[in-house]
Length: 555
Image 1 (tube, helix red, strand yellow):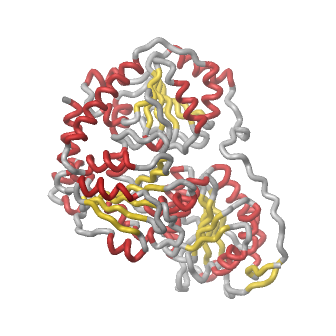
Image 2 (cartoon, helix red, strand yellow):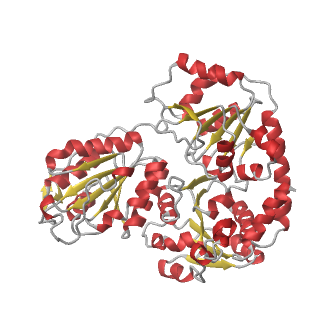
Image 3 (tube, rainbow, N blue to C red):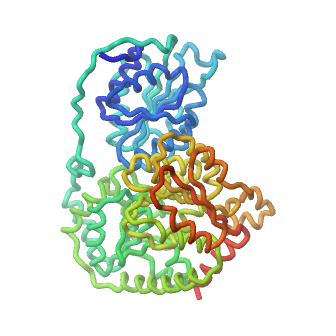
């Protein structure tokens, strides 16, 4: 026997989560959600974590789900608390991350009558959720089951809205039950239905006849099988594989710094680079240059491989293979033949030349954001998890080679800066790897409540590149020409030192290359608390260095 909420609907919600193998719930405090707090707290099958700030809590849960590839539940009280989940829900929707949002609500007779903490909660996330379960009583168990099944199988956010009338805190003893939940093996292809071979052969014939084929890999969870399959692909000299650092695959014959390759292109090179076939997979693409290139010089065929959805990013999508890349390649390989071509080799030679220019420039350039990234990216211990914030951080990182042993993640579903730190904290909590999070100052301060968290592991490391504002707006030509740069860049003189003191982080600071190299010597060493390194870079010089860098690639 154990104590449980007396409310039967609350009992059903908790029970369904248990039987559907939900292992973690992130709870934000409140009163209307008391029956569910009591229920999850009493559960011996679900880990209950408490995070006060709902926006941070949602991204924290997203970070856990990102790493475990399993659904994580979120629980909040009624009213505006729920709306703070929306940024993370949108990110989960576009990044295919399973979140189960459970909101407590007032019953219908208390909505829109002037009662406190009430809003119209039903279907409030309907544009960015896979399913919405608006419950009435314990007879609605089928809706809870449907929501959980969709989150698990379709990998995305669902919303379960649970109305409670008072009393809210009553408890009763109920009998313990033994769960018999069968865990599915991770990364299994057994549940997928293979493509029709005769249909696939039509595409293989087009592939085999083409001498310029491009494979573009966006954000992807680390997969040894996909790594092996892509290595097989580049044995074909007519295939050029382009990857982003968030693709989590690596090979000397892959083009890993797309902007570095494309930026200096002359007009004739833009045409030479145009593929006959573009085969894309993975999540959203960071590189603006490759988007411009493939929109202006469209492939004759654009095929996207994904079990769930295909975005027409380059305005040329001709076919969507609704299957995982791993299963697609395992079928497609048997139908393909190598094609004589210099397409791959020509651009690999260009990659080599760009790398030489890159190294020469970075070695001699002034202390700046670019110099800092060269230093810190090479300092990260092997086999760590690297979390990146958006805006300048992910874009600078794309210019550098990254240790292939690192697992790299970034919130690229909506590309927002709002929850990057909280996501990294959740990922660090869920991962057995040391985690390094690189962020900009605006992103860090925006999400500073991420540090208000009792579950941050001692091996978590934050590196802030503090350039005193939104540095990316100095590189974009529009803001500087608007005479309103301060409103875009938002300059400031803040540092993270007091936040670190309040949240029990070790704090260190560097404002030049000598200090940075010194601080990095012990930064990754074991400690009994997490650490933060703040690097101060010159706000008015960073854009000049970066522009000179790209100009250097052209010369």
